[in-house]
Length: 407
Image 1 (cartoon, rainbow, N blue to C red):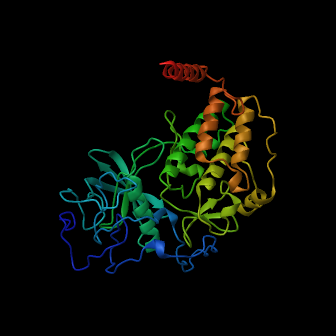
Image 2: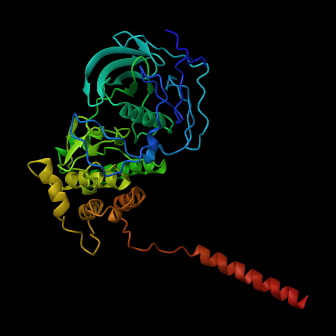
Image 3: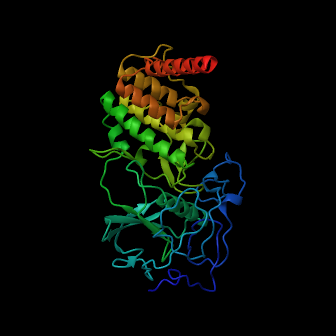
């Protein structure tokens, strides 16, 4: 089936969205309002499952001039986009496939051959697929019952992810499209997650420091692009036997209710407990960069000690501990051994006051110092060369002044 939008042709239902890339949602024939116009408070109460979703909160991740594309434009085959890009990308000459139905054997996108349905997902279905360049992969096919604003958020964030330079520390979608149903393609990887690694804790301290350094670098990359991980959780960290760990799932945006239960979105399916969610996110407040630092701190604390920072029989008990129980603070004197330094750092990452937690950049510096056996409070020995050069320059100026005085 020929895609009329690949060649720039439109239709009677062609519309625009005020984003750099927009979503083709089947059945819609009117302009979709931008998500950034919503002004609901960040800490609005979380709707009960099945209840009508409240207006989406203002999303700072999308508050930037992104241009427009025709409604129905396919979203894959995007050229690399920088954060300063304002012009919409051109799809001229893009060879794309749009099947009439998503079924085994259908070809979609830039050559993804659809396989079998392999399971469900809080956001829809997972289908196996193959691609001549990417090999084995899977399609996350967004559910028809998913609220339109949730589908838009997922696809827009994935478009932004596609524009980033590839990094082994961050998951990056292979392709995405809105036809015949909204879908996102990801590489197929059979890699253990941090959840599996936590069950093996405690680990050797150097391994914990190496994991912390790479994951902090991943958070730094996200922050450099003015983004934040929407659901930093052990299930969203891949830890391969060799190579660096990888943050996944960060195009999503989970919310937490006051009972400590994570939801995929307001009114959506539950995702489990919120052991690694900071207390300030209770009641549906959106994640922020220091929330990811808190989550990473909880994971590292458990990897190092063998126990989660807080525990309880129910998610509510866990979050009650997180709100009231104080992990013993690190001593004023900097620990000398690596386990002590790592534990002290993880405690600072778990601070109840988000302003007291280190930034991702500070974490990178501190993990590098720990691995190098260097103290952050110890001043490095100053090099004599700057003083020698300054002395030579001063003597030259004095000599030049004397020459002019007696010439």
